Length: 236
Image 1 (spheres, rainbow, N blue to C red):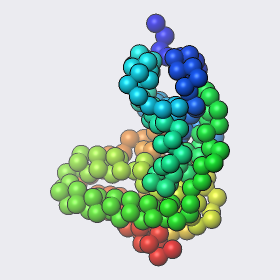
Image 2 (tube, one colour; image 1 turned 60 degrees about the vertical axis):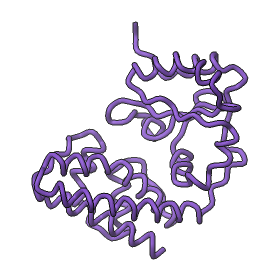
Image 3 (tube, one colour; image 1 turned 135 degrees about the vertical axis):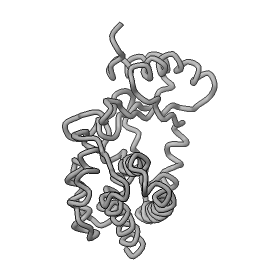
């Protein structure tokens, strides 16, 4: 049996939920220019329904299970009320999804959804300093172990890229499509050497896996880029 495609997934979700479906979105890299999936080939989705209860989740279970077996994460599932009421709590995520999404079933969910600048700023400050503290904490233990250092930086890079995109939006700077262009634009606005993150960018793009050595200066440069970004946002 062929693996489930996105079109099949959307059709099966729409059939299973009927009138309870509000919207099914693809977001992230699969919805950006070129339409490529994430580096591992998986596709991120967001499902909004008229409400979320046990009956709805049970109805969705077989469809979602087949989608996961095809190598994709289960969709984020929200009720329409939760979707409209959470823009202040997840301001970064809403703005990032709004900037790169595609509706594959249901209607446009963005009507009456407003993300306030101050909510984005507040969440970004909180997440950047939290990320920096956790990175430094883990870095000290991983510094002499190249494998641990690689896992630490590689596992952190995608979320930092989201934070860079958000920082560019707050600065009123156009947000490019590719990871390399986002890092270049972020470096120009914030003031860190973009070339120091070249290998991290290649990892994010799937061009070459990141492989750090003990006490690798590339890891130190990455931490410095996060620190400068946190300081920039805090002073903005």
